[in-house]
Image (cartoon, rainbow, N blue to C red):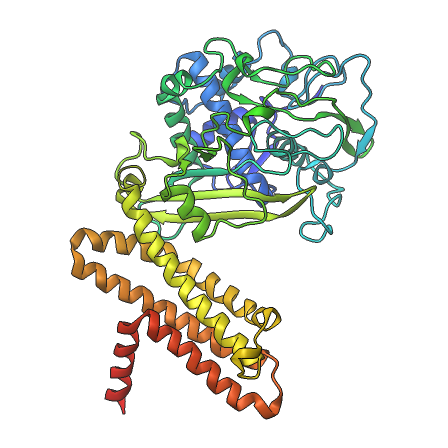
Length: 521
C-alpha cells in the first residue's frame, strides 16, 4: 500500500502540505489560501467532496461543531471505513484489488482493467473537442496530489463517455454536468470577491448538519446506515446501488479505476462497466444535491450545456420561480449579517466534449440574499426590465449595422446582412452582463426608497447601456463591408436608424442627451 491520505502530507497548499485529515482541520482554522496544483475546473469537485465528507463524518459521530485538530479528523474519517484496519480506502495505491483504494472500488475477480492511463490529467474528467482548451496527457512528472485531484474530479463530476464509460448520478443525463450554485461568506474587511476556503467549507458543513432532518424527510435516502463512500463495497458487473441504500450526502464513484506503481511514479488502468454505479437515471439529476438547481416542473437538475452563467441564466435560476434554489444557495441561520457572494460553477458540456469551465462569483449583501427567498417576484420584475433594455439596444445595433451592410437600402436587407452585427451585439451584451447585477441590486434598494428613486436608477441603467451600445456601434462601423460609393450614405442611415431606435425606446434618455448637447453648444 502507498500514500495514505490520512497520515501522509500529500496535499500542498499555500500554507504548507497536509494529509486529508490535516487539510480538514486547517480549513476549520481558516488557514488555507489555495492549492497550487489544483486546476480551476477541479475546484468545485474538491470543495463539494470535502464538505460532503466532513458533514457525513461529523453527523455519524454526533458532532455539532467541526474539530480543529488533525487527529480528531483522522478518527472521524476512519470511523467511516470500519473493517479496514490498514486504512486501505484512504490509500492511493492498494496492490490487492479485491480491496478498495481511495476513490477506487474493488475489482471483481473476473474483471480486467486493460486501458492504461499514464498521467492524472489523462484520467481527469475534462474532455476538449480539439485538445487545445486544456492540453491532456502532459503531466508526466505528476505528484500523488495530482492523482488525488484527478480522481475526485473524475469520480464525482464525469458524464457519459461512450459505451462502458458511465457518468455520475448527480447530473441530468450523460452530456450534462454537475452544477454548483451556493452562497459563500465574503471577508468583511477585504474588498472584491476573494473567498476564504475555510470559511466557505465551515459554512456549508454547518448548513448541511442543521438541515439534515428536514432534507432527509423529503428524500428516499437511508437515515441510519446508508452507504456514504461508494468505493468501499464490491461492484459486481451489471449490479447497481439503489437510492434507498445511500446516505443523503453519499460520495460517488462512476468509473472502474485502479492506480499502480511504475518505475518512475504512479500510473493507472481503467475498465468499463455495463451499468452506472447508481440506479438513478430516471431521476434526471434531481437527487437532493445541495448545490444543484432543479426545475420545479420538469424535475431535472440544471444542464448548462454550451451556455455561460450570464445574467439570463442566473436571473432565470434565482428569480423566475421555475427553479428550486438549492439548499446551499439560500441564506441560512449560520449566515450572520455580513457580505456574501453567489458562486455559480459548472463544466459547459456537450456530446463527448466540453466548452470550458464556467465560473462566476457575484458579491451581494445579506439583505439581497434574504430577498432571494422573500422578494423573488420583485427581483424578477426588476431583472426582466433590465433584460428588456439590453434586448432593445442589441436589436438597435442589429438593425443599424445590417442596414450598413445592405448599402443603406432597407428593402435589400437579408439574414446575411444581420450576421455582420453579431460581433458588436455580443460585445455589447458582454459589457452589459458585467454590470447587470450591480445595477439590479441598486435598483432593488432604490425601489425600497420610493418611485422617484427607482426612476433615477432606471435612467442610470439606460444611460450606461447607451454608452456601451454607442461604443460597440462605433467600433463595428469600419468592420462592416460596404461598397465605397455607398458607404457615406449607408453609415449616415445606419446612425440615424440606431439613434432613432434609442429615441423610440428611451425617449427620456435622448431628450436629456439633446439638452446637454444644446447647452454645450
